[in-house]
Image 1 (cartoon, rainbow, N blue to C red):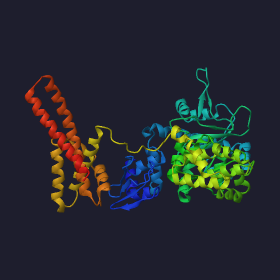
Image 2: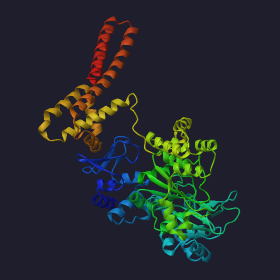
Image 3: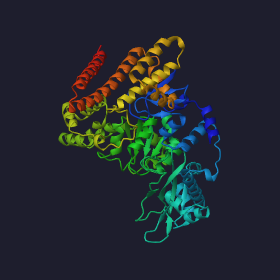
Image 4: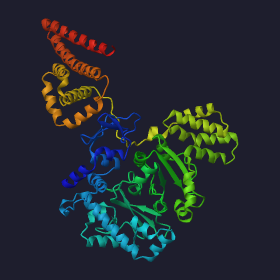
Length: 575
């Protein structure tokens, strides 16, 4: 594995990789951009080509090309290795069975299930006829590895047993279930269904979605794999592995509801499409899409595009600052139908998609409601979406637009908007990496120590034409830190490369670097003095309890000296 890693690192540099995901601008010897791991307006994400690493001053995300792909794509190391190997044109080594991790072994079990379902599809005329009638061609069936689960209780179970797969691994991947009350009685999870493998963003199968072939009154139309160690329905989007490149290129994603919709849109050469697989669209899903593009089109079925004031996914998308549009299909049609019958009409529906606020406003206007009733409906069904917009400018734009269309005064709309509480504010399940929080008492000292030691180590790597300046910074730091200096030096040595990157990224080409370093040293001295003052006060209290007059006088003078120095430092900040 190590040789594969080394080959990949030699062929892919960190700047070209990360710039294929996000926009980077030159910043001295480094590059900077807006961090993809937390929501920010001012770029605080730096990439160092010299060190082959990145660091975010906002959320402290850091690492190399492998950790970036892992975090961005939501993968483990092997998943990121697979993606980067494909980019680099490196053939991954085959590993012995004994070297496989548990996840690799489970992925292997799911791959055997894919093979089984594909073989059963080739043998079942009814399943093949269904796909043909829906307009799915052979190439698409192969591309999406579509299969068929026979309407039998234990076919897959017996097949996997014959391949040496344990019942435990079958259960862990969600391929079988255990009958309640029976000592040992297993049966297949999927029976009588068209099978769609669900993959993570590296293309590894993590679960399945099965569409019932012959509907009955008892079974759901679609059945997904249960939650497993590989499959998290709140995180995985069907088709994202195939759509992500085109989403970046076209700068928008299309969201459909079902597997068949997605398959048919990809077949119709609309490859920037993903599906929610019949589950509620979560903030984790939207966060993944937002990293690829800030724009999303939801393609609804013609008979299910009604009002959705409780549509949490739409409200979350807006609260994240995404541009959300609605594309509605003709009544009685879903996107898969149009992809088969009239691709141009489908593309026109997507092209003319309206912003969700405009869409719902126009829908209400088309009902011909009298003015009072219209106002109530706007308040109930439109303003909740306006309330989610994080930008006041955006809110103002839509309030003006609604007022112009409905002849409701802007002032009245603003008043009603004040009474709408954004749902995202109280029910958010944010998946972003947290922004750096203000250092709590006791941690501010550690933060300043890290910065000061970073500056000293960084200055040591610079040319010798400023030895005096270097010596002055180190001398002042030693006077403040005293015997702890050597301890810190040894502690930060193990993290030296990252510390140098942080410091260089922040301070290189700074105009007032001397002033900033001076303030940093003053801040460090202030923190040490505060600690010294607290310790002196404890000793003073003990002296007072023992009525040691000489020591009390001495300690009072010491506390006064420390306090005066702290005040001098605080006053110097204001000059």
